[in-house]
Length: 348
Image (cartoon, rainbow, N blue to C red):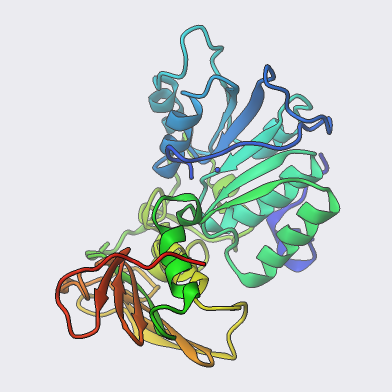
């Protein structure tokens, strides 16, 4: 593959990985997967969520984990101990995703990297003839996401985005009940992320660990000094790499909130405000935020509360649907004026 620096990418460039994750579609050669064919997959980003990818793919009879990909080689020893399947070959371990994508026998890439890498790996993978499972959010910003969609269509690749809830049990019944009209109009569709997030403190800029290729870790992000608050998890709270909890856990709840709104694509307008309250630390993204999406007859509200708080309608991380005839708390319907739940009406 041709090399593309992060600076050039910025300027010009240019499935759940839990029990329900699905891998299907076409091989890099363009042939349909037969019942006896094995899909060779590479897992990019093997800390945290990537460990779930490895664990689930490793149990699938028709999937071979061919590559573990991460710029932090300290993780290879830990993940190399992960039991995959008896008799399975050990995966190759590489720091640069391009080395895996150069392998013509690789069929797909599973992306569990920090957010700022999601779109670029998706784009490179499609260009290399691979299918993709990419964790949420599919992109670090809207522009990158649209580019990834365009490239997937151009190269006729399958790209699955890890919003996950749409393939989970129960939510189709909720959406069917809302769409049936039997509960009246949906007035407010609400998503919540009430998840305590403590201070991350302050870390001094230092030389990166010898086992970490920090240049690759930065990838398409602006070049900057290393500090230990970036690798591995707290990058979520820095704008160059993450999107705060609205772009972390919030992706799932916003997706389900919008799913319930008839014909919802883009809202007429969005208002959002918040800040980082309760402590001072190195983080940049809000730990307290509210966003209002105007969909006309229905308003979508998403709220982040990173400080300790009570649940709302029995939901901490979840969804609440306010309808004319009552409230759906998660997947439970509470009729108007009642405190006990009632069965959801069947969808049409």
